Image 1 (cartoon, rainbow, N blue to C red):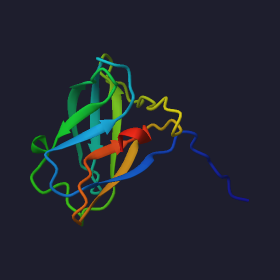
Image 2: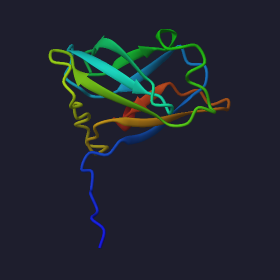
Image 3: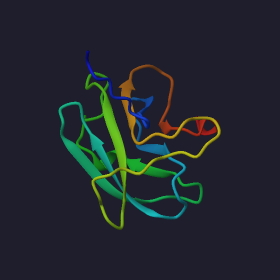
Length: 128
């Protein structure tokens, strides 16, 4: 019989639309705190940046800091994780203490075509 492993903090599933200059990550992390984000592309390539959360625990990723054309609707699923800035440890932080959504340790998202504009990733749902 096969062993089944259950991930207690799965990735939050989301999407953004094409052509955003910024991505608002609704992370509800600790306010005004430094973190490091890591974006893993479908190819396995990793991109990272340093951020400080706002007073709500959210932060922005500027798409100009990523390779041109990386975030396109044909690329596949990306994974975003966040590490505590003081240690840059290998363990990602757990996001979200919202009453609307369960906690998660990453966001899996894709980029979609269309005329609907969406540049927010994550939960709390009231920001989406």
